Image (cartoon, rainbow, N blue to C red):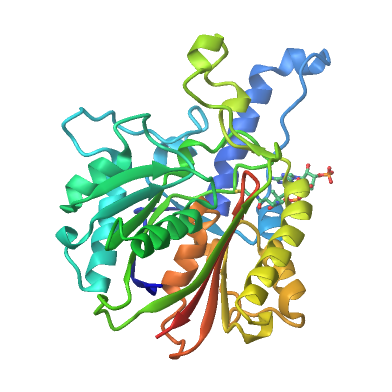
Length: 373
Ligand SMILES: CC(C)(COP(=O)(O)OP(=O)(O)OC[C@H]1O[C@@H](n2cnc3c(N)ncnc32)[C@H](O)[C@@H]1OP(=O)(O)O)[C@@H](O)C(=O)NCCC(=O)NCCS
């Protein structure tokens, strides 16, 4: 069977940083405004007072120190608490496509390719900007690619699931070179008014080029030794926004129409699932976890990643084995493990093994075992 390689990655990083201190200051201003507005009802016991957030909690519970966002002013405005994006006409490039094209062009340059060399585009992300036409078709046209494009969503595992689709398409002969993009505008699905989760997400876009090994010319090539995916239904990470909402006559701004989670349960259930899954995947390829030089894990929670690695290889967990990017980027949904790979692979040697692994809503877990050529 044909070998498939990752021959380039690219990253779009939004222009604005929100530090935890800035985030907490605006959240606490929102809390004060709300509590002031509801003072009489709070005093009468009809409404519960909102509770302020804290930088110390956020850093201790998650490891997140800041996040990048496309719009900062809207998020930090205590009277708004969500980004503001200018609507665009149908003949303008969509926002998701714009950040995808930026990341895609960087990945193409890294792979030494042009857009016209690509004959398959997968737009894989936790949220799509519209129902149709597929974002992937717009991105395909904007980068000058041929072939076909389609959108896919497996929440935080969208990128790894897309890598498997790309590998299968190249092996099966339906495409020669595939561009996977992960435009994650998570600031638009995050409930910035909810203390339990307002610190979790950041915006970003990653891009990955996959091609047949015998055609790839980039100096930096990663043979894909195996991919494995699993899903198991859970309501513990959920967002009910969807096209039926307007027919249900429910409030489009209701709490269930943005990201919700039972963080503790997710932590407890996903850690053993991911660790076991990676171990089994490696075993099926004849490897033990300790033979892997680097794990580029999903970036949702520092403690979660430390536990996954400890279960796999024991001992101290340092950035050499499991690099962390969530302190800088926060949780960027499906892009997290790809950002970790993008920033932390240059020092690896030919023959070194690595695992890209995502875990998230679904639940879904995807692992990609790679070897540097
Ligand atoms: C979300 C997460 C960081 C929360 O951390 P946690 O330790 O589980 O925190 P909890 O929600 O249990 O809250 C602990 C306490 O901190 C408080 N707290 C919650 N948010 C707070 C905030 N922003 N500031 C201060 N205190 C806060 C809670 O009220 C609670 O107080 P109590 O003990 O008096 O009841 C963590 O559960 C997590 O990351 N889980 C995995 C999530 C994940 O991977 N999701 C995938 C998404 S794609």
